[in-house]
Image 1 (cartoon, rainbow, N blue to C red):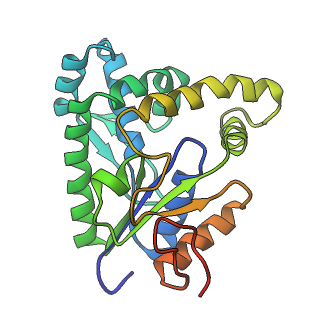
Image 2 (cartoon, rainbow, N blue to C red):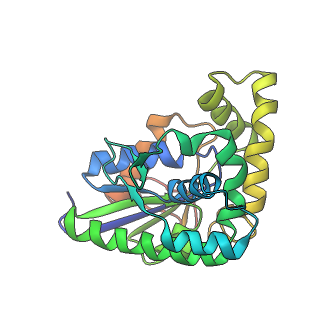
Length: 240
């Protein structure tokens, strides 16, 4: 655990590796882990279950304020619950993925979930010594004052291959085609309300296209421990 509370904010598009990498970094540093994307997915799932049209912005915004959400912040014990229902697997289903952008681009929804996210971050800084929070606007809006802010990015080809393998167990032509629309459409839609494709001032960019999972984790750990220095303006980290 760090001697002083640490917040690490990680942004990135689909397939950049931000969830698995952030979880591993949190585990290694003894910090909490917050998957903000799962919060939007939980709301999308709940709207579908409650027969609330995701395109009905006022109704979805009301649902966000009433969402009985419990989300694990233990990097070794992933779970998401809505009320008494464990939706950890359900929020990753294609039907939820197809609707989550309609929920996530609702500005009133974003305001409510950001409020919850900041409260969780503050709680984890007090209770566990810090948090690795990942999503799509964590470095710019949710935690712009984080101790370390990183944008994970990757080529479109690499991102599609990773997500196809994750969802279908392979990255052949058929599975890539099945994955392309979900991944690229969601990134395109979400980018209308979140800045996660290019780094803002002070945010370090780490291109993971040709890196292994272990190499990306090692790079973030080195940054968190001050073992490498970033370029002065949103650059790639370099060894001193």
